[in-house]
Length: 434
Image (cartoon, rainbow, N blue to C red):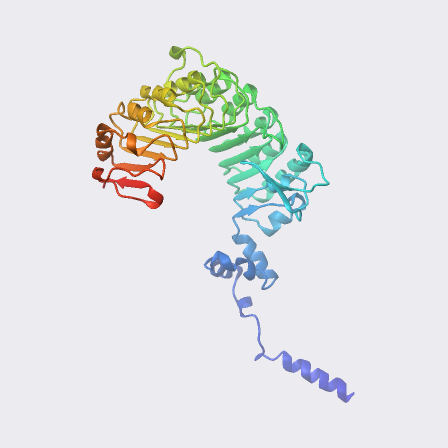
């Protein structure tokens, strides 16, 4: 009996008002949330370990999330744990793989971990029904979603997101096909869209003129569109140009389009930037120049990692973009003097950037840039056949009139010191007129 009394006294002493207690319990959730939001991001993980309440409040501060396990979405734990998300990248979770695998396979648009004992390819993608179910759960719990990346979704799942998330502005769909684009049409406020049809070694799907036409009629507020591994032709590109009057940037990556598609670009009346990347052929048979048209508002044309041996395709592209003020050529194969000479059709060029084009010489570069009377900025990087020793006095004089000048074709050569260009790192030269 005496021992029981002593234990009771000991317990009562530990519960006195002078004992250590959680003072944050006196704060409302709203006030504590404001305090936690002021702390640096590096403390978020440690803050969430303090107690269950802090864990829940910290989850309400998270706006961007990369999902690795699709079951986390299907179970509803994602929207319970992070109710205020506005950006979700679910592509890694769309591939069934072991997260503890030490092998990672990457492409420029997708990356996933694989197990040597598992099959690799489309077999790794989750069924469309499972992805759709997760998207419905996500849409119901995160109505303020603004950006979403997903792979292997079906029409129903994408349509649910478009219906529930009225603020959705940016969407990336991997392994997309024509049927899925019927669901994209429900995203009425979409402004940025990235469609990835086929990725070699990962998955194969078809985006044709049918899908592009459905997309054009449903998403009329598009400002930026990127087509990766997509099929189609003149009709699909023309439909986008006619229906999406606000489109300002069009990117075509590794396309599988039919010959003649370039003529459809001229229907994009407000297009300002055209990007063509990783294309073996720009346009195999663009047709007659008088049928190509011209993008009157176009300001920038970027070509990266493209095969430019076909002069007809490049000539057609430059004809459509003849009003461009900026031309960027990066790591393009087959760009020699004769091919670059096609760019003289562009009379309004103010900025020219060429990098990694080893066939181009100083003579070919000089012949083109001398025809551009409005040129203000020139950047030449890693073009080994462009040599300082081949620079003529007329070309050196032209360099001195530029507002911005970067010259690093080959670090083995030194630029003449009497032009007034300062030396940069690794033998490069950079000049900017203020």
